[in-house]
Length: 298
Image 1 (cartoon, rainbow, N blue to C red):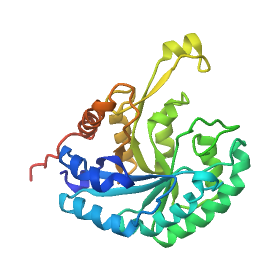
Image 2: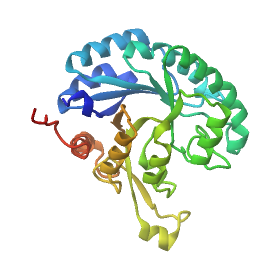
Image 3: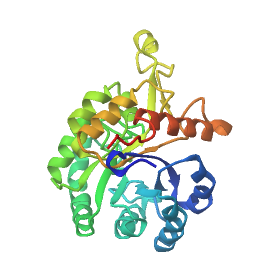
Image 4: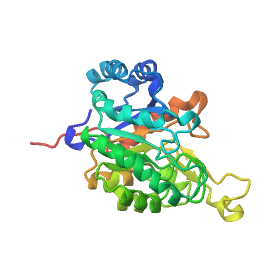
C-alpha cells in the first residue's frame, strides 16, 4: 500500500450483481479499488444491503469502492431501459453507503437521431440528475463508448466525441458533471488520447483501464469501412498507449481518483486467460505509477 500523498489506486470493474461472489476471489491479487457496474438496471438489488456486504469485504483490506456505474439509455426509457433513469437516481442516493462520490454511465440518446437532437432531452434529464447528485455530494462521470454509434445515428450514448462533450457541458454547466475516460474509446475513432487527456483532464473524474491496438497497416490499405478489423480493445500492458504518460498527466493535474481495469474485451487475454490479463494489467499499471512507495531519507 502506497503512502497517501503518492497514491493513485489501480483496481478493476466488477458487475454489481456478482460483487459479493467475485470480490473475495480476486481481492488477494492486489486490486486497490473496485468499480461496481450495472447493465441498464440495478434491478431487484437492495443497494443498501449490497453496500454493507461489500464494505465488510473491502474496508479491512484498505480497498475502496471507486464508483457505481449504470449503463443503459436514460433518455428514452424504452424496453429494457425502462428502469435506467430510476437506477441512476438510486445509485446517486446510495453512493455514500459504498463510500464513493462517483456515479457513471452512458448519457443515453434518442435512438438513431443526430447527437444535436438528443441535447434538449439530455439537458432535461441530466440537469435534474446533476442537481440531485450535487445535493448528495456526488459527481456524475460519462463513459465515452460509442456503442457502435456515430454523430448522425446510434443508441445508448452521445458522450463519445469531444465536440459532443463541449455541447453537453454547455447544456448543463454543472461542476459535478464530468468524464469517465479511457484511451481505448478515443483510439477506436483514431483520436490521439494523450493530447486529449491533457486538454480535458480537469473534467476527468474516473479512468477506465482499457487500451487499444490500432493496425495502421490495415487502415492505410483497406480504410475503416472495409471487412477487416483495424482496431482491438486491449487490457493495459498489451495495447499501444504509454500509461506512464497518462498517469503523469493525471498526477500533474492533481487527479486523486482511480484507474479501474475494464477487462472482458481483449482478443487474446480472454476466456481462461481473463484474470491472467487483468492481473498483468494491475501489476503493469502499478509499475507505470512508479512501483512500490519508497520513503525519502529524513
